[in-house]
Structures are given as structure tokens and as C-alpha cells.
Amino acid sequence: MDASLGIGKRVKRYRETAGRSQTVVAGLCGITERYLSMIESGQKTPSPKVLSLLAAELGVPVASLLSDSPGAEPAAAGRAAPDVVRTLMGYRRPSLNELAVSPVDLRERVEQAWSCWQTSKDRFSRAEETLPALVGDVEHALAARRRGSDAAERRDVLRIAADLYGLLRSYCRRVGRLDLSLMAADRAIRVAEEADDPVRLAGAQWNLGHVLLSDTRDGAAEEGDVLVKPGDAPRRPTNDEFRTAQVMPLESADWLLKTASRIEATFAEPKEAADWYTETVAVHAPTFAGTYGDAPGRAEIVRRLTAGEDVVGGWWVVGGRFLSVNLIACPHRIRTQYACPAP
Image (cartoon, rainbow, N blue to C red):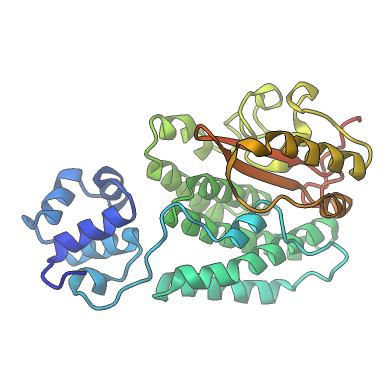
């Protein structure tokens, strides 16, 4: 960065590098767009408090806005580590036959991850290294404790999960994956509700509003605003319209609660489902322009379904559209309370 740049120009450079508008950054920092514009043009000097808010929102240390010394590792706009995406979407989770990590160890790891995210200059690289295994272990522990009889331990793991999803919400938003950030924010609300923890629930609801405010697509905030109120949106199964709503649910397992008309097919055997998945992907493969990850082979699909794991695939196709092909396992390893639909 040019050593001659002042504070305002540094703020502008970091904001534009992240691909964010003045309106969004100003709103999230609690200042007016005009005031931010005057800061960036050098007409105003931000107070220490405003400078701290801007640094936090842009994901850089305050020192990076004050001088040209090396700052925080920049986020790659629109890119999330493939392993983080795969784990968040249901891949790479340990088998239920494996022993779950203890709540004490999980709490320590989540707190360490949060500390690194808030203080490390290479926090994006560190997050990409630690989050996949941490997400898998926490969700594995959730599934194991939901099947157990220790209510106190189950609540402890739910609280840990709420804190982890809060971190995932922040990570995904910083790298420009607002879709995954929204999903993580909603998961945080779900586990906070299940834990009956009003403090974490309030924080998760506020964080969800933060994600919606960050989404600059036309109508994004209006479309999702009701999600801030638990159980008040057709994307969530507690809403009366959920079963027949045309929108996708926020959790893949919630497809099990949809009416038959909203599901392509049901299968009694994993091998039949694997055949359908591979054939469906093959039909659309000529139009693929990109993918979230490699499509699993038939044997891997059977293994996942047998273990109660979903198979989730997503591909960008020509014309700027996105195709998602999913197999939802039943009985489901996470949502064990959901009944299986008739084949």
C-alpha cells in the first residue's frame, strides 16, 4: 500500500478490496454514509471509537488504518476454504460409531478459535486449518448427546455449538459467502433455542440481522428480515407455510418435513439413491461451469447414506445459474426426531 495514503484513503482501499459499499460499512459501524464518505475523502478524521469500529468491520487491525505496516491477512472476497464449505454442508463428519470429543475439549478449542479469529494477522488461513475438524467434531458431539440421557451435558454442547456457529457466521461473511453465513446464523439460533439460553439466542438473532444487513442484493433484507423472529419464516419448519412453501429450507434435513410434491423421489435402499444421484449429475454435467467440490463416487454416496449423512452437491452452470442435487439421509444422524417418508 502506498506510504503516502492517509487514514481515509486506507479505509477506502480496504473497503473496496473487500467489495463492500459505503452504505453497508457505515450502517454496520453506526455512522452515516456521508460521514464515512468525508472520512475517506480526508475531510474528517475519525475518532478512536469510530476508527476501531471501522477496523473491526473491515477485518484489519487499527494499526493498518493508521500506518502502512503489515496488517491483517486480507479476506479473499467470495472464497471460502473448500474443506470449510464441505464440512458445513454435511461432509467430513466422523461416524457415529466413533467416540465423541468431550465438551471440555470442545469448549477449549472453540475459545481458541475465537481468540485466533479476533487477534491473529493470518486469521483466515488459521481458520481454514482449524474450522473443518472443529465443525465436524462439534456436530458429531451434538448428535451423540442428543441420543444420550445427560441433559446437562447436552445443553453444554448446544451452547458450544452456538458459539462455533457464531464464528462461522463471521468467517463466511468476511469471505463474501453470505449464503453460508446466513445458514450458520440460523443454526446458531436453533441450537440456542434448544439449549434454552436467552443470552445466546439474543446474540444469534442480532448476528442474523447483521448478515442480512451485509447482503446488498435488492430486497435481501426485506426477504429475510422475518428470520430474526424465531419460527416466523417459511424457510423454517415451525412456520405454518413451511411444508408447501416454494423456498428451500435452511437446513438440509428439513426436506424430510416437506410434502411429497416438493421432493423429487424417495428410495428404500442407499444403492438406489446413489444410482439416481450419479445419473442426475451426469445429465447436467455438460452445463457445469464450476463446483463447490468434487462429486462423490457411488461407493462414497452409499457409505454416507448408510451412516445417516446427507449427500449435498452444488454446481454453477452456464448462464449464471446454480444447480443443487441433494440426498437427505433417513434416519438422519443430526435430526434424529424426523420421521422417514414412505418410499
